[in-house]
Image 1 (cartoon, rainbow over the protein chains, first blue to last red):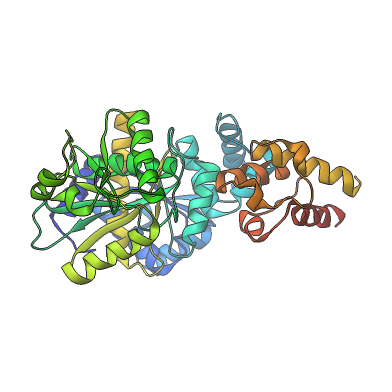
Image 2 (tube, rainbow over the protein chains, first blue to last red):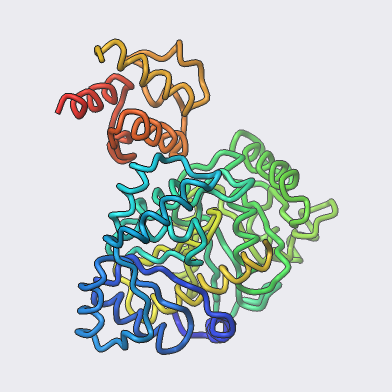
Length: 339
Length: 80
């Protein structure tokens, strides 16, 4: 990800109200370097979860100022007793005390339990955990947000030379998680994407559910799925402008929309978020935009959970991790503001 | 606990987790038949862990075809 004005603005927002971020993989050199950068900048309060002695040694080895960090030791029995009591009291907790204690031995799951009870605002992992493990852990311990049926991902394109309703930027989802969404899941992806993109950009979301058909120009099960998703999304979140089914050009080009969409729509021709109908389209769509339009993309960011969970790519460098932390913290701020 | 009793218990847990009639679930029932998602698997594995103190991961269940395979996996750990 490039350091652009959006990220600069987000960084200032993150610094204005630093969130508490649990790092479950600070035993990794790159992650510790990123923690050092985040802490020194004042972007977030860094809470390192693992074997505290080893983490302190790693911080010293990497030249990170320990006084800027908090350490949570997996073997701190008093703290674990307290966490078990508070986590098991949550109505969303599905585990027995013994099962919770089993999970507290693992840094990622310990971090997620801390987040569930409100000790931290974000859980950050991905450099040594698989995306599947991060998603499953979040589903088990944080849970899905109300009215959301699936985890998913969202990103924001910056497309040189393109002029849409938000300049050269466009939100998109899901390109990474949900392979073949049901109508309920597709609606969930759209709702989550609206909330995530609004939190990061301040835009009023106008979200288009994409298809090969515009307003019934085509038919069949693929179209019916998208139409059903729109109906579910509108019913679940009538406050959001989510519309479709639209072809891509009907969604983002006012000229095309004026010819193809013969009904009132707050979204057609002016969409600032597009939702792919499945992961085939999502993956290919992102690569088309990146390859042929030389676009950069922020994300993909995980979404759909009750709280913010971030999964960076395994090959992420320090600046990419720092950018992911910044975006996660701004999302956490927005989540709190909306509670 | 006999194998039959364990199978009946796992069928009950599976019925609750997948919100379906447990009496129709047998060792031959496939997870494809149950048509659930990861949240159903999480509900099932957490119940097994809470009730029988056997930790079966979602990754393991994703590789299993039938409820009978899950029963075998739980039985193996209970016997150890």
